[in-house]
Length: 295
Image (tube, rainbow, N blue to C red; front, side):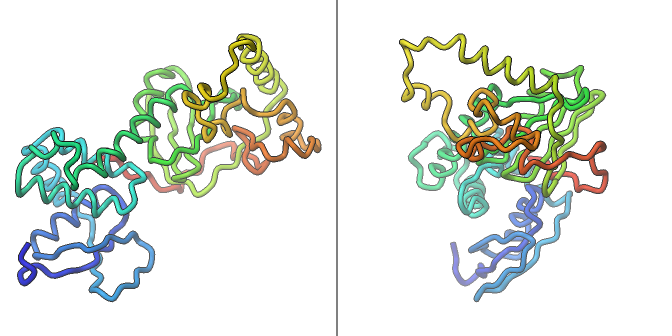
C-alpha cells in the first residue's frame, strides 16, 4: 500500500453489515485506510475519526463486487460479520482488500495469515449453530413458544430459517441475551428486533409439569453405568446448560413462583425467566428492527 496516497483514519459507522460495506466503499473512493472501526458510541482517537453514513446502494455495489469475484468470499464476509471475532471489521476488510488485489485463491489456504483468523471464527460460528439447533428449549406462554439463548456469536440471523421451517405452524420467539436480539415468528412471517431486555412471565402450572416430565425423561434414559462427564462436556458444553431445562435443579420452578429455594439452586438461572421478571402480553412495536446479515 502506498502510504503517501492513502490516509490513515478511524471509520465510525452504525454497526450494521451494510454500514461496514459502506466503509469499504468510502475507503476506496477517498483513498483512506481504516486503522480501526468504531460503532455509534462516542469515539476518541489520535487519528482522524470520520463517520460513514450507511447508503444501501453503496453497500450493494461493494457486496456485488465481492460476489462477482467469488461467491465463497461473499459468504465468508457475510457470515464473518456475525462472529465474535475481535476486531472483526479490520479482519474482514483485510480479506476484502486481498480479494480485490489477488483474487480468491488465498481462501483455499487456511494457513494464509489474512484468512486464518476469519476461518477460525467461522468454524466456531458453525459449531455454535449446530449445537443450538438442538439445545434450544422452548416454553409455552399461553399458546406462544418462547426460548432464550446465550451464544457468543450473533446466530439468530442464521438460525432463523431453521426454526421458522421447523415450527411453521406455531407462533414463537427466541431471545439472544448476549446480542440483545429477538427473533419473532407468527402467521408465516418472521422479524428480527433489537431488544435491550426481555421480561418473561412465570410459567403456568401446566408448563411447570411439562418441564418436570422432561427432566424425569432425561434422567430415566440415562445409563448410570456409562456415565462419562468428560464425553458429555464435549457434546454438551457447560456454557449452554444455563438455558437447558434438563440441567436446572429440581426446585427452579419454585424459585420462579416466588418460593425461596435452597441456596444451591439460586445460582442456576431459569431458562425462560431471567431475574424473575414478567414478559409483556404484546411484543413492543417501538423496537428497532435488527440489521440483516447481508444487504
